Length: 212
Image (cartoon, rainbow, N blue to C red; front, top):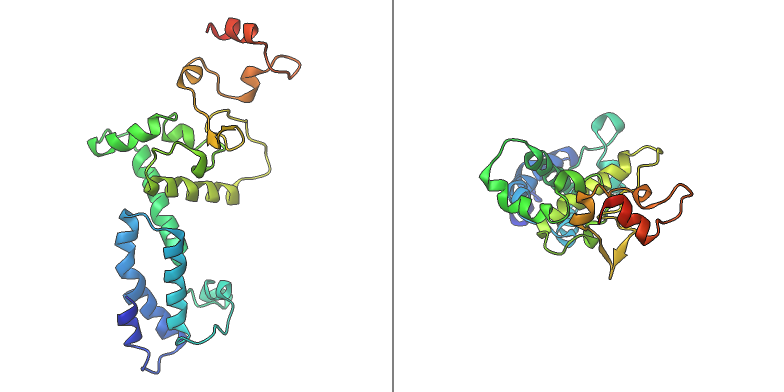
């Protein structure tokens, strides 16, 4: 990618022209690979740095990058943000994995998620991808990280019900908890283990309530 772009630096192109080249020759070669393979944050940052380096002909930036990402209607260049592209590609997998159509290719993936309640359940939890089961492949851990970021950006001020499982707030040795036997007994929210006064149920009362 970098070699092909640098071949154009001798041309007297405008910023708009170099932006078009970044989209057609730069990112186009990375999109497919990024949709199938894990992309570390260091790789995202390095790629974005190289793209801006081409835009400014290896000189210091003259305009703030956040301005350049803006559309033309807002006086930006609509310059591509590689992290946003990777994020969108990774999030697109959620719809595929939640599709009710039974496909054999999802069997292995569902095996990992079912260990902590299934993907649909996980997405409703207040999780941190780093604190979830270490058996989840990096590719799908990135997907969960990006979904959490998106939810944090879009979520309104209404307080969500506090789900006990996969919570970043309730951990043992910095790992979130998930106990299938408790979930099967319908122990899901924090209020499920509290009495009428908002105190934790005594163990004998808990056993009586959930027939454990």
